[in-house]
Amino acid sequence: MTFSSCGKFSSTESFNSEQNNNMLPVDFVAALRGTFPSERLYTDPVDCYTYAYDNSRKFCPPHAVIFPLTIEEICTAVVLCNQYKIPLVPRGRGTGTAGGSLPERGGIALSLERMINILAVDPANRVIVAEPGVLNQTIQDTAKPYGFFWPPDPSSAMYCSIGGNIATSAGGPHAVKYGTTRDHILGLKAVTGAGNIIKTGCYTTKGVVGYDLTRLLVGSEGTLAIIAEATLKLTALPAVTEGITAYFKDLNSCTEAIVKIMSLAQLPSALEFLDSGSLKLIQNRYPDMLPPDANTMLMIEVDGSQGEIQHTVASILNTCRTTGLINANKTKNTAELWKARKALSPLLREIAPKKINEDVVVPVTALPEFLNELTCLTNHYQIANVNFGHAGNGNIHVNLLIDPDNPDEVHRAGQCLDQIFDLVIRLNGTLSGEHGIGSEKRAFIEKEIDEPTLTLMKDLKQLFDPNNILNPGKLFP
Image 1 (spheres, rainbow, N blue to C red):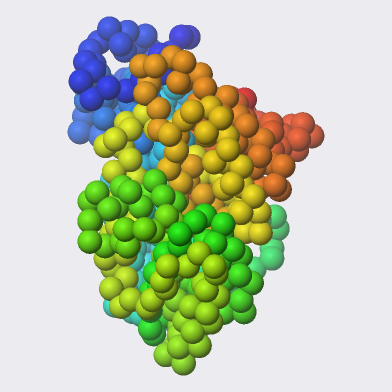
Image 2: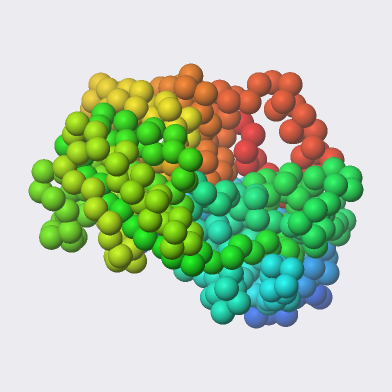
């Protein structure tokens, strides 16, 4: 059976039956229609169009889209796809940038966006139980009246689903203090690629019965099992939150401050880095927000009790006093800061629709060397570059801005990216901090994972998904 292949996405691209001409078996579609009503089963290519791409800007049309409402319906879809050996690609809201939800081999896009029930709110046990289609922001809004929040806070929180957060172990600015999604999941209900319903983890914060399959499934990008229900661990909202902005004349002074801040006993709740290219983008949109001579910037947030805040803010302000500091000040208006920070990715999309966006991580102490060598590499290959990210974790979003219609520039960007990844590994870093591998980074995974470990991972994939129907081709080269 032959399936469709991916192409470049264009907002003006037509989508017709010729692009979807490798049809599904008639009896398979009939079996699907026996479970899913017409409003929850799309087979018309025009209806399927929205599910052919994600934020990676690649285009891979599925042959059909189904919208389950229950774990039993997910199980039925998996069993049928196994019977006919048809790819099944789980999908949240399509906000991922690594191509993890693209149906590269056609088949079925399994959209979980209609599984939006919050099944339990249990403030005494600090737990919310929810289906995978619930938005991150909905979880925050539900937890807040009880004095809690769910720490994973990607920039797309208003639009991304918790199922997608779980698939990539999403992070965000506050991961420096609170960790990523993997640290805030107590248990899961899921359907394996073999069609078995499994329950992992437990309802309590302590539990050591059996293997930790929960942490295995978190970050597995829909290649092992389809998440149908998640038990989320909540955290108490801090009593007080304050912000600090620090502007520097040069990169070295800024990275020196980062290392010193992360050496303090008082941990910031967020520590964001913006380079000169990022500041220029913000200045164009918010001309009065930044000092004109600022070359780099730190956006720092501190939370805790009133007593903790005063001491922590004083320590961080003192630590920012490197030779290149322009100024460092407290700010009460943290909302405006995050508005500017979260605007960066959309602004970059406006000026460079085909930017290469990576989210590499290096040890915090390696940041000065990494950012300086990154500058040398992009200069050598003559590639425009904008960097920002979660400096407190050493997680930098490297954006290579290229013209996709310039073959020479695309080639140089590829060479540059390859050397950036080599640099990351040499500095004891990792190729992805929160976006995942998907299809965009699978060619490079062997730089980080050795052959015996990769073989074990493939064996696990085979155990969970013996017919390789779940998101086939992702993660592994």
